[in-house]
Length: 112
Image (cartoon, rainbow, N blue to C red):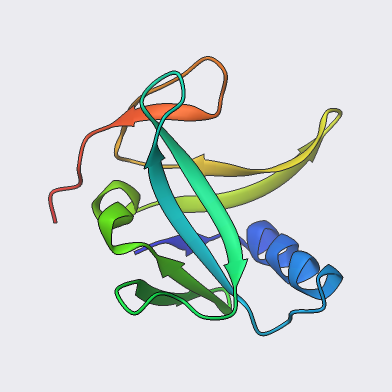
């Protein structure tokens, strides 16, 4: 399961409104690449894939790519702003080591 904080949910709603797509779903995936081997992909989509696992968190529909589910199990998605701007923050219990760039990570598959 993926959980959004209130701040993350507010930002998703803001993005939905700014794109004039209030009924979209937040889709999350993990792809190969980056300094440490894996990186996160977030997108707003009108239709999740048939194989996606779907949840609702803070009133936001969240779809997780089937192949990424074990990497994202237990993920807490937050949003915060600082002097450099705002961004989503990933608190993932499956991460073994994040890259110093802050965008990629290595992970251990969740044992669920």
